[in-house]
Amino acid sequence: MDKDDITCDLFGSIDELSATLGLVRAEGPSVPFAGIILRIQQELIAFCADIASGSATISSEHVRQIESDTERFEAELPTISQFIISGDNRLSAMLHLARTVCRRAERTLTTYCRTRKNCPDHADYLNRLSDLLFAMARKAAECRLP
Image: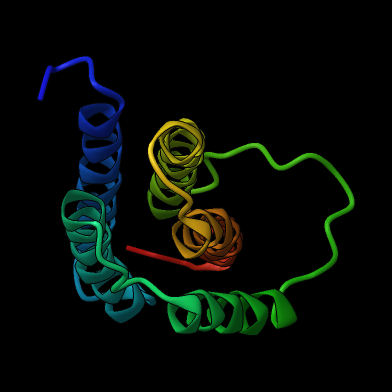
């Protein structure tokens, strides 16, 4: 596979997303959602394996879990009344960075799916994941972390 192949670009974006999430987990035991982030990192490995093998490990059930996690965080947050600017604290800023990497991966996946195969659960997964990362970033902005 050529380095500029869309599949290689997609793998790179997913790898970067997982590494960015690893930075969040590395913040230590005070990270309130470390377990969810580890689960997502494991799912991102399965995501890449699906793309490489043509299988479908990532399913609508994974999408529903991401949606459920998002709804739980959003229920604890106030309604957004203004544009969110990242940087309230380090954890929140890293989650916003992960969200932007996830959005890029989603754009790359869109091109991949258009040219290679239909992959609706994978596209839905990344789309909902960026929503979850946004909700987590907002929740982290409320945290008083060391």
